[in-house]
Image 1 (cartoon, rainbow, N blue to C red):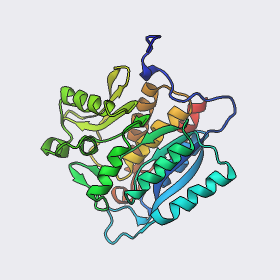
Image 2 (cartoon, rainbow, N blue to C red; image 1 turned 180 degrees about the vertical axis):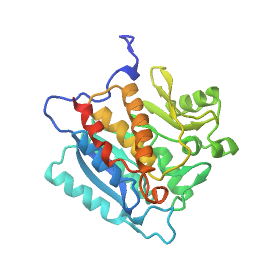
Image 3 (tube, rainbow, N blue to C red; image 1 turned 90 degrees about the vertical axis):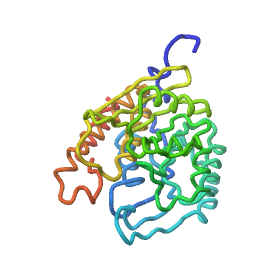
Length: 297
């Protein structure tokens, strides 16, 4: 950039006065288990955003539970979004996550066309630890990968990055352990697809830390890490990206946003461990929403 200021130190969204920005949240809705819209709506609302859900599927529970039920909403989405255009809905950011069918990528493109100035946040929720989620077909993975091109913020884990780049998913991806050089290669390859900001999540090396590598189109690349807690929880990826976007929509810089998101998820996991059956019910964050609201201070 001509002024020499890194994109990581500049806000991606300029918050203006008392204006409440609107975010189209293109995610599934899960009845039990904290994830997707159940995370995005409260977190972004606490950051002073008007969240407009676009439900990509209805789940009885998250898919770690046996016997879950899913209702695919693909058929209703064209009329759903057409109704928005008829009443003049304005959107400042399009935030997509879990998708139920390849055709839903076309609906996100519809939103991009309807709102060409809106921020594009793509959380490519489709795989983790070397395994693709059970509802994701090869066609849906390929369609999801196409959304990486032109995203303002892309937040893949290592497995998702490999899928987007059409690379094999190896043992390193399953173990979430790669070198700094390999992380830089993956971030740069994703940036080469036209993504403005890449956050490569969840790198673990057995040293008690969990690392996220952040890269921007102007060549900035830095690492943000947090304590690695000795348990995993469903929904932490959704919480991370929702917190990152909350900070962005509050006018914070990219670097501030990724640090806030990592700290918030870490603290939410500690709160979660105090709840009964916490490893089944998913990440608990409700007592911490005041920290999101404080982003506006």
